[in-house]
Length: 537
Image (tube, rainbow, N blue to C red; front, top):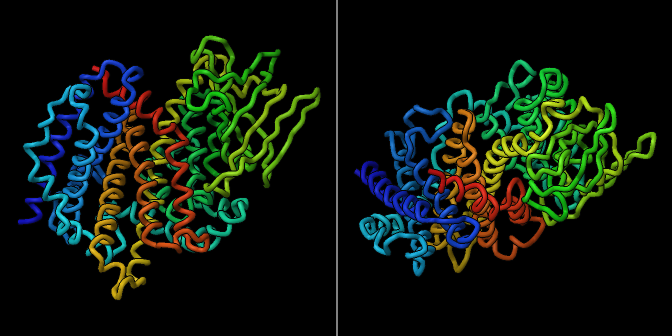
């Protein structure tokens, strides 16, 4: 009866949580004025949504397949049900902590979760965690994946590539801050990696977001900096071109991006602006058949190797309505510095920013000084003037979804390393894996990963359907924060060795830290996207 009982308990908890979050969202008057509460409500909305997807019979990439965590009778059904209850109970405990003392600010009665207290207790029972951990320790997997036969083949192909070509060099690239080897880029290009979300008529795979999620997870599992992020830049620039470009621009740029013949980078963020994109100051002034760019961009990942820079620039002083998008064509450079000049004195140069982790692609500060761009390279032509902000925000939905998949890949790798070490290491006369606290950590890692994975596929469906801005922001915020906790706990289980660079878990820990910062900082997503989305009638 456990397969029937656990999903029922989890569903009751999730429904109660939805009620609390819904009432709190309706009670919020202003995400700007009530930031502390708005942040908590937004964050909990993401966690509750993930808990629901872990129960959803359509939680896998193939909607309608009937293979959710709480359904089915296969060998994984029991584990999926246990994970759903464990995660829902942890979310309830988190929500209760955030709610305590702020009930009136949330507009919620302090007894709102009393009716499901017994179910929460069942989900937090150490015996349940032990049961989950037993399965995870045996399989190194965070529950069932429910992939179609086609996606299983995709996963197998990219896992093999990652094992053969990426994993052997990942630690070296990180420690020495090296460039990504050309054979990795060329190999992924040959597998169609850069065209996963580009329509087939332009040389891509036909907007395969589910495949993109699978591929991204497998590459990030091997290395975030050396492979997992290679798809993000093409995702952003291709989405902007596909949605806002002229037909001529689509045919000129998209096939080159899809084939990997032209690599991409994005130049949006500025040193004094950060996530407040509407306030950027880099300017583009029309001069005959050209636009002249002036300004500084920062955190332009892969800007050295890239042939195409997607540059958001101000073409009019009218706030976010005065922004336009350009594709700047340039040669590809290896290394940490590069500079280009034009006849007449225009220049553009890049300098890599040294970072704690996320190495290999290099993040650059890029300075434009009178750099001339053909008028034909304004996305949308004259019709694209003032549309840059909207095109960029639409493109970020794909990027945030992809970033959530990156976080899941990093977490899956950390879980596997934690399981392997816990099996091998003996502490106080018995294997580390036999200690109850170790098992509790392993079980909670698995529940977080399973929930984030299910929510990522759900968000992919929403984005494919033409909406999904809210879901993409929610899963990005949730998965990236979860990755910090999972890698931290996996590192902790390694003890002193976890702090040594010779152990890959140290790389995963510092790589995970960047995830909550880029593609929309955690706080900005919570207040500017998620909370506002929840407050809409």
